[in-house]
Amino acid sequence: MRIDPVLKEELKQYLLKKTKDEQKPRVVIRAAYALSDQEIEALKEKIQILNKADIVVEKSTDILAGFIIQFDSSVIDLSLNSELQSLEHTLYETA
Amino acid sequence: MENLGLDVKLIVSQIVSFAIFYFIFRRFISAPLLKFLKQQKEDEELREKLAEELEERKSVLEEKDRKMNKERKAALDAALAQGKKDAEKVKNELIEDAKKQAEAIILRGKEQIEEEKQKLYKDMRKKIAQVSVMLVESALKDYLTVDAQKEITKNITKNLPKIKISE
Image (cartoon, rainbow over all chains, first blue to last red; front, side, top):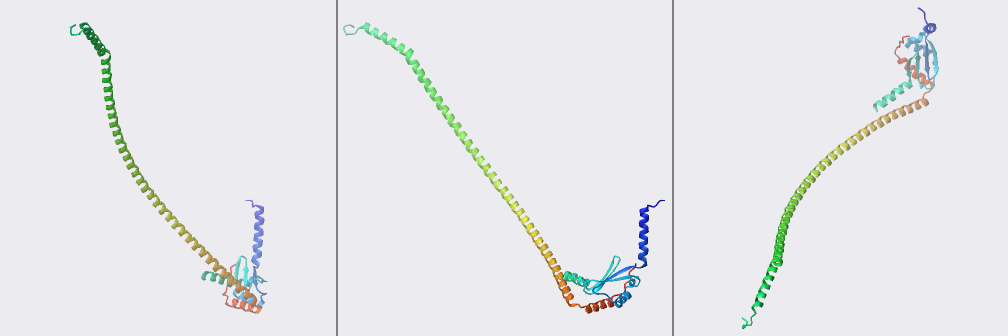
């Protein structure tokens, strides 16, 4: 059985990418200020995946306080902004 | 006779003349005249009779005409009454229909007003919530120092349960 060369190449690339990704997942933490090592360590204790991930800390002026953790397509929003959004929703529902 | 002064010949002659005159008068004047008069009288009688018949027929026809007029008037009155009745019925139906339509329109209008009201109320609530949060955000931006932000982050981390994310 002959395999299509294009398909073969795509499969190869996919497997390489997957192997590379498996080595160390990339996690982005966005916060209102640059998080200190101590704060990151505290986070690592709570979120296990951070221990074996390549952590990138980004400063975002949009965030009032707290932080947003992004891993692949998953997002954990622990910012004050999301609390305010919840408050807005609550106000809208209960007003 | 002659002594009496009468001329017999003359008398005979006059008698004959009279007889001839009478015969001629009777034969050629009196008879046709009488016949003519009789004919005139018969014609007159016939005319009168015809006139009477005509009069009688006229009265009969007039009576028939009156009767027909009466019947026609009665039929016309009945038709008019029926027409009025039908018109009244149609009018009532139209009024009833118009009332129903008007009620439906009013109801639909009320429903639309209620929908608009609800929509407006919903929009207003949304705007109020948005403005409120915007005000809070604005106030917090001015109020929150880096220390306050750190304190909040610390609290969040502290209260955060352990999260396990599968790779």
